[in-house]
Image (tube, rainbow over the protein chains, first blue to last red):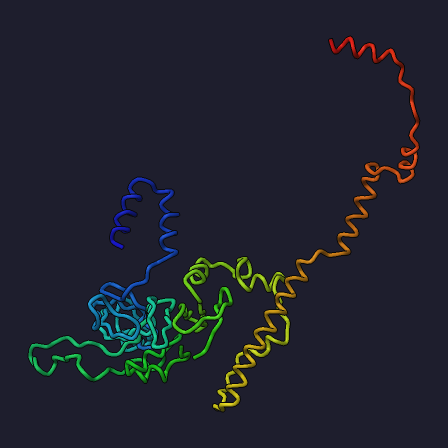
Length: 184
Length: 164
């Protein structure tokens, strides 16, 4: 993949007109891979966030797949609603831009194998925000050291949009399953 | 376990084969192999791609309406297991398959058979246009009445001279 990136850079240096067709050909048959650091994911609940960039995948060396939990930074959140009377704009939703959040991947463009042998893939990468990662405070060092171990966070939002796969059941994200509009 | 049809080519997908693609509007597209999947990604319309069943059905190449197809319809009600029913169903599947494939072959044969009316019309047209190429039936009789022509001896002398 990096090789291809270098090649396209070389091409763009030489020719600019024919580069478009080559790029579009490559884009048409994309090789979908893991969700890793830098991957932007769509937020599909009503927690307030719109787009999250993955900072760390909590499972797998190569990255996260469908059903895995990632830590991300909120890049885009729901706009602040201006209240006429007061000066401060009310933040719509629980999540602000710049928050570091936990999220579970509910839709992945990379195919995932199922127990019956079939493969499933979705149109985009989407997460449901589980919880906001709090910054470690030095004063109450031990208290604030929230280690992500054992207990699963509950989704922060109250609605989930779009199709949700059955893999959530295995990952014990039952609340998301119950909130889902469509189960795949 | 359920056997499903490929969205692109309409062939049956057996367990362990192919990819399911779930679109964001929750519509599921199942593909039997990467060929169909890639064609879908290219946004090709299966009704225009010649090797798919959708094309053949849309263009009347294959049989589409027959009672044998009704046996294969998707039923969402689970059947209570009954050994006899299962046995009979398995036998019936084989028989229905045989009947259906023979009927499909018949349909194709019929389609490929030369159309008699068409041929007749074309032949009539050909005769009308090219009647000048055919000898009149009456003229054959005239030919048969051969006339004897006497050849003079002078010509034979000339031939001998040429031979030398």
